[in-house]
Image (cartoon, rainbow, N blue to C red; front, side):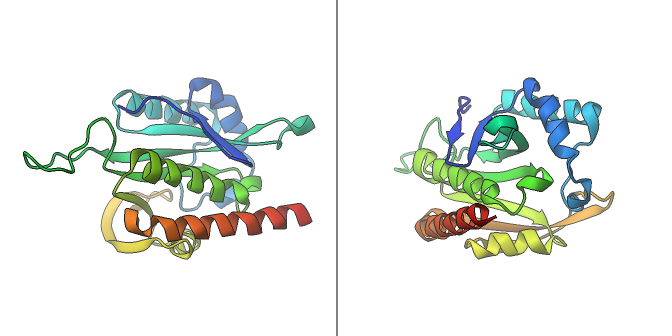
Length: 219
């Protein structure tokens, strides 16, 4: 089971999710409900409390590593502000045949990044880009995973385009995959990045982060 850890960047800090984040998450999720057509995002204190407690139960089982997404300097007086949440999920530890040289212990072999949502004001900013960069850097360079996967509603063209821009490869379309955010049975588009592709993906994310930083500074 991965120990809780924090990932720090210039614009964002990903810190272990806890019940203490609930009030700030409720506020963040209330900013612009119109942006959550394809992503389930809890609405109100009751839904958010259930969401966080469910996440923490999965963390306790070693199934997820859950973070609160904190935007640096976005609060009153330049304080930090919680603007969303994200997770490592679908964490898998492979068992190789006896005598295999690739067998590892205590670190995942493959992971997904999912359950990601952001407040309206944090979307299309450096926050999401840097969060993905931090998480993938940890996955590929600390855990040394073989694959990081991401999936989204097949109808979410903006999310799919963003994954493809950084080098995510479409693995397939999973029909009737899970409940949709709009009370439908969702079909998912599943993408992945493998270890050999990580240097190129890292360069794209870094370049995109610099461009977004410049755009934010110009506003």
